[in-house]
View 1: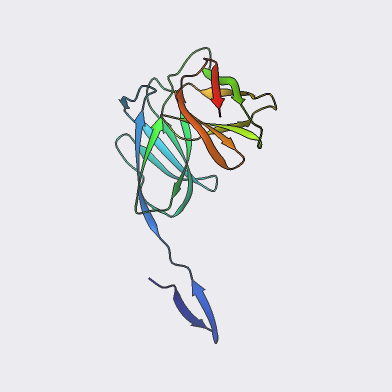
View 2 (view 1 turned 120 degrees about the vertical axis):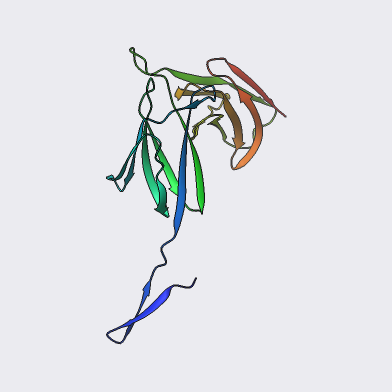
Length: 181
């Protein structure tokens, strides 16, 4: 639908078209099992716009960026950024088990060996479960470290400038050696 034009005081004013998308949130554990959502809050621009009890979903939201807080018994409260930009968004909220001693983090480290030096190397880690991603520049000798990561298996990408030159699935806390030709 084209934006609606209104004549106000002999001037043309464009009224932006508001678009809506349906948001559905699923809670999953680190091993992929479904978890019960006890309650959920939706924030827009730092302001609470919706507080939902067990079993309720956010439903229709204007296109835009939101922060979702998910509460589930036995798990830490999880906060996620979600962008609504299509008719239906299904979001998997990965929950971490609540621990008395604090959160459990992991790291990815290793070395990239290559036969020729053509540009900077970057390592990007994308969790297999949940959302987000992490990246770090490899040193000149090919060493890299990504620390403080949520515990998960990762898809590890190696980029030379803007080109993906290697990819593999890796487990955390185990050194990785990558050979590039």
